[in-house]
Image (cartoon, rainbow, N blue to C red; front, side, top):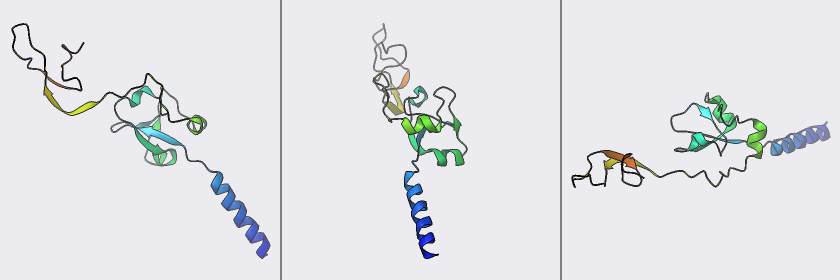
Length: 120
């Protein structure tokens, strides 16, 4: 009896070690979970355990279509062209000069310091 309990306990412990948690990613404001390389993660990328994401009500992204198998094989490395631009938290006045020689009055959160019209 003791031997069978020990074997069951050992099997349970081994099976628990083989369970690999899948890491998915969510955004600050979104309701979907994503793979590491998904382009929807351009501005925010928060690592989340898949089981926790599902419990929290997140659903799968329609673009990257993350499945348990894909997430298990996901290397969590974004492609080379996937660069997250630095975003300012608060807007600043554009650094550009207008044709009249005055400073542009538009506000921007762009990391370059220039508004959409002057950022080339």
